[in-house]
Image (tube, rainbow, N blue to C red; front, side, top):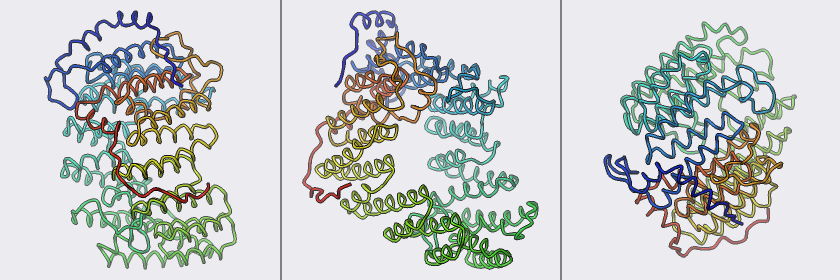
Amino acid sequence: MLRSIRSTTTYIAMSLLLLGITAVAQNGRLTDSPGGKPGVRAVPSKEQKRALGTLVQLFELSRNSQDQVFRIEAEADIADALWRHDPKRARSYFVDAFRAIDSIKREEQDTVGTATTPPTAYSVKSELYRRIGILISSHDPRLAKGLIDELPKSPHRDSIDRSTLYPGMATAALGTDPQRAVEMARAGLESGITAAFINSLIAIRSIQPQLADGLFYESLAVAAHDVDHFSNDLRLLASYVFGSGGAGNEDGNDTTGGPLTPTTSDMGLITDFLNFALQTSLAIHGKSGVRSAPGLMSYVPLMQLLPYYQLYLPDTAAAITAAFNQLVAAVPDPQKRTLLVNLIARPSVDRVIQAGNSLVKTDQKDLLYERAALQASSRGDFERALTIAESISDERMRQKSKATAYVEAATRALGEGNINAACKYAIEIPELLQKSRVFAQIIRTLSGQKELVRANDVLDVAERQITLADDSPEKVRSLLLLSSVALSIDQVRATTILQLAVVGINHSDFSNKSHKTEASASNIQEKSAAPGKVDAAKSLSFHQSFGILAVVDFETALSLAQSIAEMEISIRAQIAACRGVLQTNSQGNQEINKRKKPRETSGSRITNWPVS
């Protein structure tokens, strides 16, 4: 399967051209060694020397692409991989890539082959600024901040979305410069409350909880003035206080079925937030101009937080419920009253089903049946959830509800240690990538418990489920995921699955069937893919597959990456392989080497598999 495409003559010629970097690789240099202290002389291994040379060759090869966006991203990714061993070159690549974003031609930003509109052009540039800014910030926050400060001089400054750029950079900078990370997060808050800002706040709290809480209180003032987005802002702010479990269900549990557990033990912060939510929601209503059902919209976000009010402020919870019910009763249309009570309030599953049966319109019925199915799943009543889902008329909504029930059931069974049940539920998940993620979770659990016999059994089933599917991007993503978890069990199996992923890439919509010559650093005459093809492949993540395999077998990982037909996709995979071997240290190598010959322990085999 593996084809060696290295040309000895070309390789020697390129090595001579790259004498500077190979000399460094051979002699070592004073730098921050991976996982070591500043000033320690890092001597690259044989594989790392080859990876360093390959990366610079890939930089030259990427210049041949017709897609300027790809060229910029490739340069930034190569800089990220080079940083530990050649920071001077990496810094130069980073600066060049970041500044090149402003010069992207409009027609090169379109991913569907037609003329794009300015909003699309701005969104593409904004995403590039965000992604590359975050990469730079993870290595040198000061350099990242300096490059951002240059942007107002650009005639295209409106294409910069600071609401996601600064928080992302803050999270990346946290490990190297916590104080600057806080400053970046605060700068992002000036553009409003976003999921990226909350994520950065949560990351900061893990290191500097007082600073994070201080920023949280600052964000409350921002939310209070953002009337148009207050409900969404409140939901995001709640995730900082209460986590991602949502606002809970009618049983007083979170949406995963577990008890309500805030992410903070600061009772003052919890009650301050709940009081803020109540007072601000009611105050904003006076400015909203809602004519139908006066005041009703003020209580919608409060009802989502009702389980927490019941837990921490029970008197307030009772007042909120009474006011909401009174407002709903004033709605003249009985069908709308039914929808409001059952979608916004928190009735039992039985009441939601009864309400759905009483409605006339199919789409309204489906909304309530979906709600009932989700509530049943969250309570662990999976069989009932599946039965309810069958009552949904809309095919897509029905499949989504069933998938949710199967995923919840598999996750619950895995948590209880019932591997057989977890696998049986996983097999029934209709969406392939979702199915693969659950199988991957099961395999990781078994591998962590050293039950490698059972882990191999589950891997067999998962591989069979995926390989039977038609070639598609979803199948490729599933195989890449499966290969990454297989490395913890059997390196040979992982390599075989990765080979299947490469075949899938070359036969799926990711590939340009007009040419099949291989793209490698030693073959720089390669043709380029159309920009739309490259954009379609951006959803592929190669780090956990090619990158991890490269740690234990760099040559195999690199050869597999080079056997991908599409030049741009191949370059991405090769960069991932090089990054994997370059970012390892002695401790990391020791940890990965355990995967080569894992210690098998006894364990009951998985038997009686249901036929898919």
